[in-house]
Length: 334
Image (cartoon, rainbow, N blue to C red; front, side, top):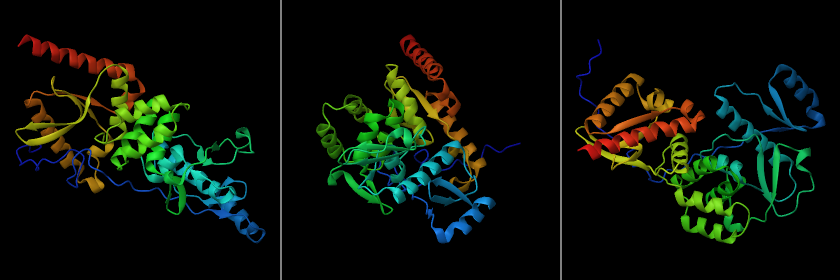
């Protein structure tokens, strides 16, 4: 029988092992583009031999990449595929360009959701190649000013602020908010973001971008939290990200919440209960139980959300509305 009487661990901000509070700047880890192999007559035999053995994969005409062991899920494989395509593009483009939009977000190490297998570049000159001829490459005829350019891992990319605005203009709302929340966590300068938006006034997507920037919040600690918050806001609900709750076991942060009604939403990603760098999974499960009990004793009702729940946003919102309605009735009945 499990021993639940042992002393609970010292409370700390949920999901953080470095003492940071939700909303504190977290420097993202850039995603390096892989090394690629370009075709040359002197390499023909070696390349053909490695292709037959499965040691190489063809990315684009004349550009290859070493095959890697499939060690991730669909999202990880898709991100790796885009990085490989971006490396191939960098080898082949002769015009002055900068990686932009979702590709820049990926290179910066920002969060992305439902990433398309397409590389985005911005260039001053109008593309001479039709998109249908190269569907994996999206060229934007935009002269990106020097203020909005930077270099990551030796590659030209738009700055985090410009990337945030570009994604907010062109991506669907939920995916745009994921990038925007992540950009703010990475320390995006809102004054620069405002300047980029002002310069784009009247152009396509700017109205949506202004809204995305307005609701973006660095306190959203994960992609899942950003998505749940988007669906809630679209339904007329307004949750507060990372609500601090004082309990008899110390302070805990609830992913999303309505403090006046003591209703919270917890996004349960696998990392919360995994081992590895996050510690013994059994200890984490036990700590999660103690945490849940402490929040319940403090009067909080928690709605647990997993990735599968995001497949049906309407059903998720119904669950949240039901919990809020019940909480309001309880408060009125007092």
